[in-house]
Amino acid sequence: MSDDFLDATAMAELVRTGEASPAELVDAAIERIEALNPALNAVITPRFEAARTEASANLPDGPFRGVPFLLKDLLCHSAGDRLCEGMSFLRDLGHVEEEDTVLAARFRRAGFVFLGKTNTPELGILPTTEPDAFGPTRNPWAPDRSTGGSSGGSAAAVASGMVPAAHGNDGGGSIRIPASECGLVGLKPSRGRTSLGPAFGDVMSGLVCEHAVTRSVRDCAGILDAVAGPAPGDPYHAPQPRRPYLEEVGADPGRLRIGTFASTPFGEVHADCAAAVAETAGLLESLGHHVEDAHPAALEDADLTGNFLTVWSVGTAWNVDYWGRRHAREVRQEDVEPLTWALVEAGRSFAGPQYLAAVEWLQAFTRKMASWWESGYDLLLTPTIAEPPPVLGQFTSPPDNPLAGLFRAGALVPFTPPFNVTGQPAVSLPLGWNRDGLPIGSQLVAAYGREDLLIRVASQLETARPWSTRHPAISA
Image 1 (cartoon, rainbow, N blue to C red):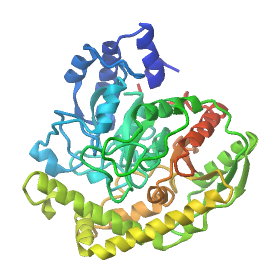
Image 2: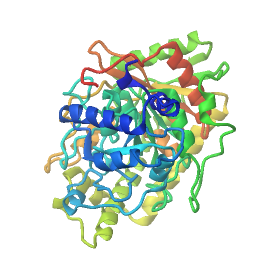
Image 3: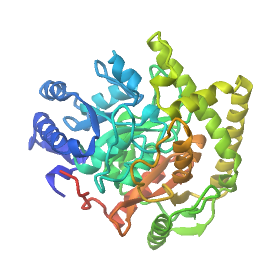
Image 4: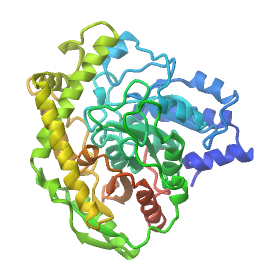
């Protein structure tokens, strides 16, 4: 692996052994961002001079001391830095946050140095990163393709070698989708594993959670160790792991019973994605696991989409109103993209009892899903998304058809939102590439609270079919 593609764990080791200083790592990463970002548009808010100052000061002696890092410009904010959440409304106001979130503070405590903020779709709504406010982020594997969303800027930055890891969050697949489209590891942790404080206890009735996109499983595990755990006042938190997640890397997962599900009642699954899952299933079998065609019957319930979208649209209306309250100024139709406004109007149309009825349905769905894991299955294997990375421009929602992008999104991502509903941990792994050289992720899902099992199996797959030597065309 070239020096530019060292993972965060290896970079931290350079600092510990004195082979490199934090300032040297930060300067090298800034150089890579300046060289690559004009082609990719991954970083929208640089903070290079602040990063240089921080790298030269007394950084916390955490596991990632001196390692350059990027924050997604959504939800997780840092003190004194611009926050836009993909909105021209916030961009034009020059909105700056005054404090770190709990997560940002924990990233800092781990020793990471923030080099800037990455691009995201407006309010994280779409599974592609093409906001009107900042323009599209381009996939380093093929610049005419989407990076996924909503953590698409972070994924492009990590895949291209700008930084070894970057923050992401996930409300319907927003860590896993970009990981699949950019050839990365993307773990959505269990609900309550990471804190959304201090401002929020949960977001959208528990759909949203925070973590990172990485190149290696060990980085995924080590970063989770550094940031997991409840903050005072959090409404719920995931069960305490029995040991650090980093100790699960390389540990024997035993012989597991794994179900596979590579079809969906909501549209077609591209042959490349079905083939990638079949290859992953074969690899798991070769490693000694029992793999069979089986899945929770609840995944085929057509009512899932409507109830999910009720919560999502009400959440979007709340989000827009939240920013209006913060600035004592009503957010109007002309302040946001057509799809955002269509969701706001839909969200405002629901009465409180209708919203709670949707939450009730989703909680019943969660119990049905959990019973499948209780019946003797350890993991579920699916495609991460239903097709290879789409060409940019397919998710546009014109004023005369404001929901067009949402319908396009539904065809792409039938496999990720169910596990935001259930709160289960799910990981996308870069185990496949198609004939066009585009990455194709496979998703593994464990029972609630079982990130340990996902990390063990992910590490086993990474060893059996390494991906670290694959670099995209646009890279450091």
